[in-house]
Length: 104
Image (cartoon, rainbow, N blue to C red; front, side, top):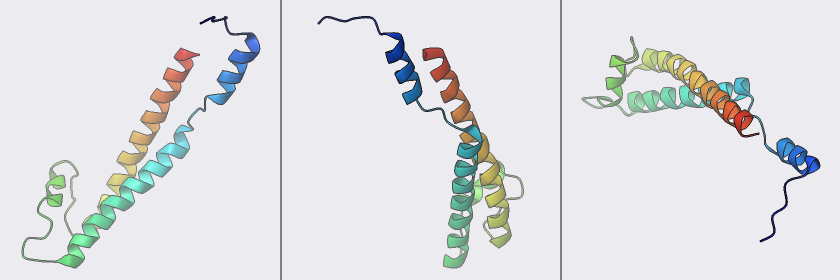
């Protein structure tokens, strides 16, 4: 094929088309999603009940101090999930934006 070098207008159009991620917004969304997910999973197990409630989810207490499979643990789990999710979302957006900057 006959390939021509990209013109300045084409490069500008490509740069405009590549979306930058807003780190604050992605951090908020991922944090809310992860926090809500952990809280809902914990509350679901508390409501479901049983002799050994949430033994697998309870293992998170080794990584999240104070977390238990209880109503209080669901509130604390929401906070932990929101903070960890926000850090994850911000990091992903930051890395993505750096890669886009390097490629352009």
